[in-house]
Length: 95
Image 1 (tube, rainbow, N blue to C red):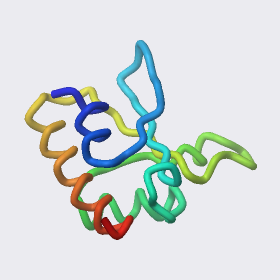
Image 2: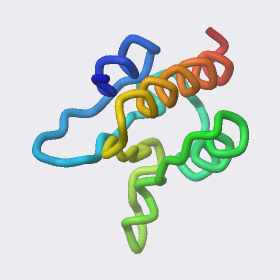
Image 3: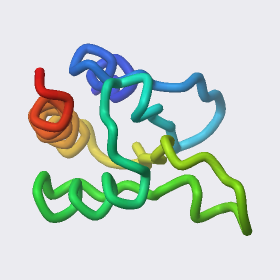
């Protein structure tokens, strides 16, 4: 499973990352108007996929349009997460 490619194919804008088990998605650039916290809450309850709002890493004035996903999982889990997020993202962006 190549999570960045699968999410990109699903319409998400994945920010570059190297040498890590995490990737970040730019919600606004992906056509999703939700803030990072609301997206993460809804993603876990509606799509069954956990993400972390990047704003949680800032004391103040952090970005509110970026979420972080961990891809230190088995390929079948990542493939299913990408599928679920793709459906969820299309619902949110009206696509």
